[in-house]
Amino acid sequence: MTTFGQPATLRERKKLRTRQALVDTAISMFSERGFDTTPLDALLDVVEVSRRTFFRHFRSKEDVALTAVKQLWSAYLDVLDETEKSGALVDVFRDAMLATLDRMDQDWYRRFPATLRLIEQSPSLNGHSLQHCAEIQAEVALRLGGPHRLELRLLIEFFVATWRCALDEWLPACAPGELPECVRRAFAAMDDSMRLEA
Image 1 (cartoon, rainbow, N blue to C red):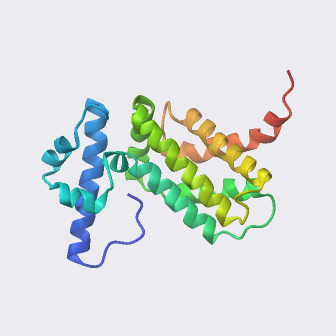
Image 2 (cartoon, helix red, strand yellow):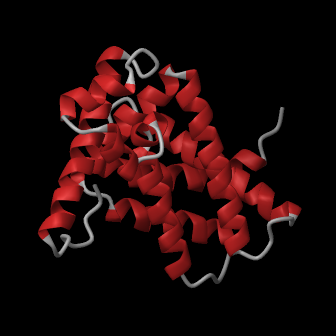
Image 3 (cartoon, rainbow, N blue to C red):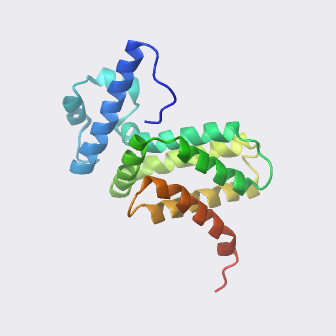
């Protein structure tokens, strides 16, 4: 998980360890057995936690599977809130993503590619991922004061598409240090792509 300081109390550290065990085991089991064919109870048996404990940490099986994706976008919104928004918004979006990636630790870089592969393999998980993406896009538009501005909505769509292209370029090797460079290259190509002719 991203690390912003260790929890202060023993109880908080124990909760964090339980959450970490659920996430790591879920990604491992879902990758090995398939997301749709692995029941939640199988995960709970391996981690040795009750349903009640699980639902203190996550809303659903989909929620635990998408932890790395949700961590990324939660951190992205935090960075965007902290960022001075001046100049071209496309540059703000790119720089906020680069700053977000810089906050991600090695555990996140290990889980994220596996999560992306799970999303590709599972229609239900893909649907949840698309819903989450739509919610984040709406949050970004809201933070920039124009949820109904056509130009802003288009720019956010371009940003998301550019991010996905960067991921496609990164995914075969998944070297942690290469993802920011893939993001830079994808954003640098955005202007030229708009001028392509048939």
